[in-house]
Image 1 (cartoon, one colour):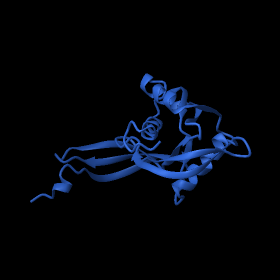
Image 2 (cartoon, one colour):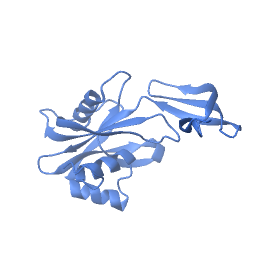
Image 3 (cartoon, rainbow, N blue to C red):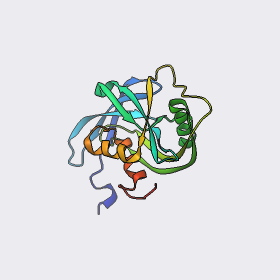
Length: 187
């Protein structure tokens, strides 16, 4: 009798890496489907990232505006960045918030960890919320980061989600979660 948990499972027959860097790798798996057919399947590997919904004392949210080459346009996103192997996502998100915006994270709490695109990538986003407190120094982005800090009322940011102006999935979820629209009622 087949194990229900294995029903529909693919079997990996082989794996070849086509590209590897410190940030991501691209591999092609040879896989056998449940019906016996064999296919090649591309997978983007990533150590993942952490992002934070920083809410100010006045009920605003701190976002970053930056160019994103894959979509060939500017995005408004929650501050965040890569989590290095073995690094605590809480430490990563606190560092990234300070670097990108000049704000410190107080009362940092985890909202959720989620796969950003499980059909294409191994990437996991660790999503947090915090009370944003302006630091003594301004933003200090890394040399490859060209970001602008954008503060706005949380309600306006949520409106931008619904109008399609904010499209980054983890930003959409984080804003909806801290506004109480997507469960949790965290504001």
